[in-house]
Amino acid sequence: MLYPSIDKLMNVIDSKYSLVTVAAKRARKLQEDHNPQLEKYRSHKFVGKALEEIYNGVLTMKEPDGDESEDEAKQDPA
Image 1 (tube, one colour):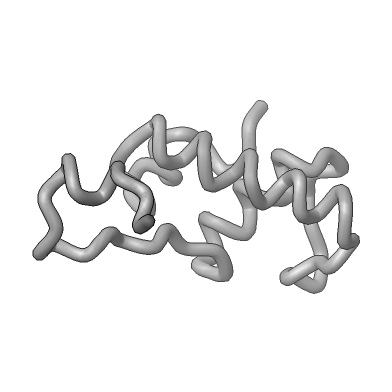
Image 2 (cartoon, one colour):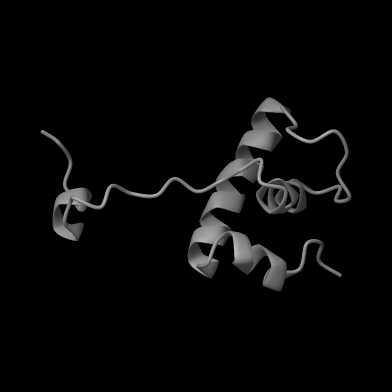
């Protein structure tokens, strides 16, 4: 069984796509750097640890600035 549940995680980050993206990036960092943010984890796998960090509020998603249009946000500043 997944801890924390998807329902609880969706209360923290409201998009499944964003949740997966944030968790995957953090799982890779955990695997590379071995820098835990919680004292104790229930999960032994990196993705599970990342999800626990999200649920406990240690890891959050950065919101994009609202004054840029979607097309401008995608362009590289050259």
